[in-house]
Image 1 (tube, one colour):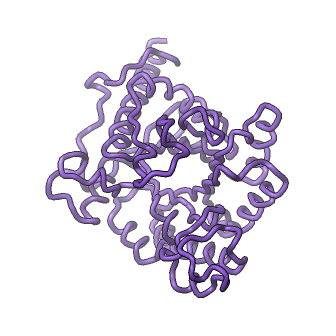
Image 2 (cartoon, helix red, strand yellow; image 1 turned 90 degrees about the horizontal axis):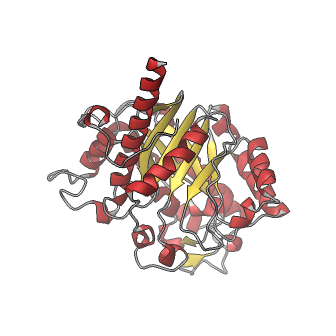
Length: 346
């Protein structure tokens, strides 16, 4: 069904008022369970009272409970910058209602990004080679295998409380733009999958986001997707600013039968590959109603291939991501209402 869509749905398809004691039900898109949310819930630009959080909702507990009353999914972005701890993961599990899902972004070390040494736990700082022990920022290729192994172990162990609560979703492995197609890169993906043996044995899935357009060049696209499928890694379908080497095309193809992720970064070209003082400036882009309507088709396309889709708005500046998440949810609800109406009338 490709009916005309508008940014604002009719009242009959609007979301019910939020209930602080429960999380919204996921959407049903042609038999696929679709969850919509944002990459994080505590960006400083989102916190001013009345923007997304009501006045008085100003503690970590209250903010997560409010967010979870609005959306059934969140991507934990803070875990990329600092390794999570079991204590914090336990608090997330306690504060979120049943049915809520946390996707968790892998720490920078796990995907070959540079790291700030001050954010590393003492056990990892003690493992740093003497050549970089005093550095404030360390490249991945300067770290020993012992540091990488320990980072993976600490990260996965910390998520145990979320796993026990039933609220742990996917692990997001977002590789850097210099991670380009090669035999070594394929080996890196295989190594990551091997580290996740227990993760998969528990019935969970990890997802891969690639950030260099060469992975999707005509001669490599099929091989890239086939590699992810062989490794049982879910494909992250991306919408990002065009015009850069890291601007991958939107390819709505699933590589795992249970899950695909659609991550929407906004389309702010001028800051996509430019250093910024505040990370949210890179993603300061609000999708228009017409742009969101154009995204419905690819989301439906990938939903028809899998059991579940996570739609994550990473344009986390002010209320851009939360507003766009509400808007795309309304569009998907409207599409489903039209589909059901047509089916009922034959």
